[in-house]
Image (cartoon, rainbow, N blue to C red; front, side, top):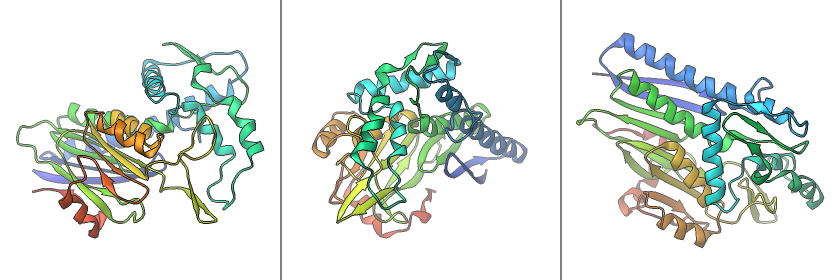
Length: 317
């Protein structure tokens, strides 16, 4: 059984596919099929592409015209609505327009006036949708699938691989991972969870045998002004960064569920988030503002591995 690896770029980051396969021709088909599937979803839901469904929906905002959607999109919207409900409105696909105020490369805070101009355009409860169409009622409103489509793509790629007969695989889309483990003797994959302040280091190691692992944090983009850190995880009610956990990773039966859970935790105040994660019923790791680890994935032996480079991650033998 030979090991195969394929790296490509999509959805704003590095993508990595690893799997075992005895048939080289099948392996090549699998590599091509996974990349094509991830790119399909990127093209369909990217807000950066003028020809994407997301851009079509956003252009129609405030015009009175509903945009037709398919079953796949309706399922994603339904999942996003569930997260909105479970988070008390904090997870909101319409909050992406706050990027118009927040430029994390500028070194400057936005004005309250600019934020106040955008807040009336935020609110999932305003979105009019059903299984066949969607309409944003206010001109200037937007939706952004960025909070869930990468995790969905990981799951979709893993499902595709299993359908092709690949029994052991790891799909890693910029840290959002899904595993294929069809055989009873399938060996786990050992993956590193990035340290919030040292991205080339692992703060913990996790052995994945099935399901998905998703990580989220405020460390990727931030502003540091007068000694205060402003992360890119924004409160849709206030328009300002939340002051919560530094990073969260969740292990779930699907990467989509793991990602949604991690994001909800990040949107909550620190103490409330830790309590919520503790009641979630899934394995998790959270790093608080003092870089202290919490959760069932934060055992002592794993945390000692923070000395080791994330590049050492690999499958166990």
